[in-house]
Length: 221
Image (cartoon, rainbow, N blue to C red; front, side, top):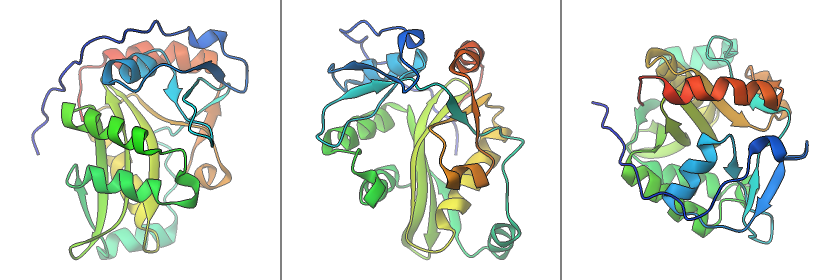
């Protein structure tokens, strides 16, 4: 699949706050909109949208920030065996909207509101949001999606409907980002599960220091 340059949307009508102004828990602004230009401005500033349970739009830059070093992904023996056997067929950008919907259907996916789904589907249409899918035959059973800007990939969510399917998709994403020479795989917040896959936490100051070089990297998804 040949890389296509993303389309730059009109700029946001809002001025983004500085990520450094956020308290350690990370929430630094409320309101605004989910226009493509607003979302991209947020990621370029080290910020991401994450609605609260009531659907109120919040903007975050937590300290510390969770990242997955591309050379430190932990592939367990069982996952390696699943990949080697080719149990799942892996694709890129073949069913992005379905991956987003699958993530929203998870119990942990309630933050992916209908407005968030529409916003990221629009960004996919413009070439900024990408997905990796895992299939059993013609059935989508897992995937991961996120925002790619230069050499930054901000992973938003993943899901599975079959054992290890989301891990297979994530492993394929890590492999692809390494091939494409991405600089930074941002997963925003660490969980115990993500730590088992190699995710680490770094100070927000370090993340923001590394971000400009990642954004400026001459690469694409």
